[in-house]
Length: 112
Length: 114
Image (cartoon, rainbow over all chains, first blue to last red; front, side):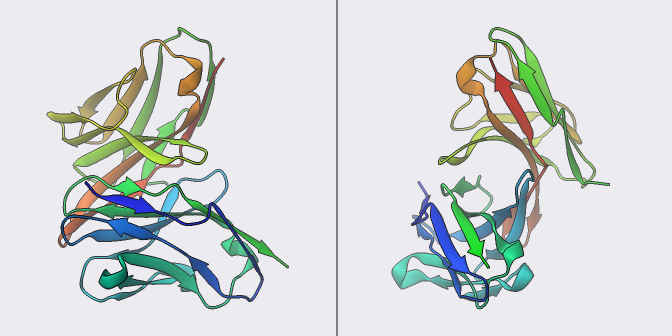
């Protein structure tokens, strides 16, 4: 069965600094990987997804993630944090047309 | 207008009461899902439905039931609410995009069971 591990329940960065949110997955078949963002009092919004077309995936709001099979990782990055990026971020994995399995989330805090 | 709507957005109820959470979508998707979110646990799947006649249990279905009234409507019921069902509940829909599904979420219902 597939699973996702997100290292760090909280990550703090300064505005303008690099954002790096870590996600490692476990899957018995080639995975499909997703990053979702949840702003306060809102539902989850899709940031980006990996479907094997390209290992570097660009998403909305300047975020991108790189699929590294050898490291079973799909870390989320953004070169320069903005205050509006403060939110909770969830990594998720699926195996084709099966249900999503979510990580426990990482809360990103951005200070001025 | 939002593509996936949930009603109510907030609900406070008492132990033992029956409660229904409703989800409607205008995206035309066949697949619908109910999740609960607890702090530090991420999202856990309660039930999912691949079409009107196909309903499946998720990881944590005990204490919950669902009804798929139409393609666009998927309701979650708590027959006898208990305090540990206090959580944030999300409905989602999905469609096939290439070789996988992509799920789209509603705004959530915050449920408190006293």
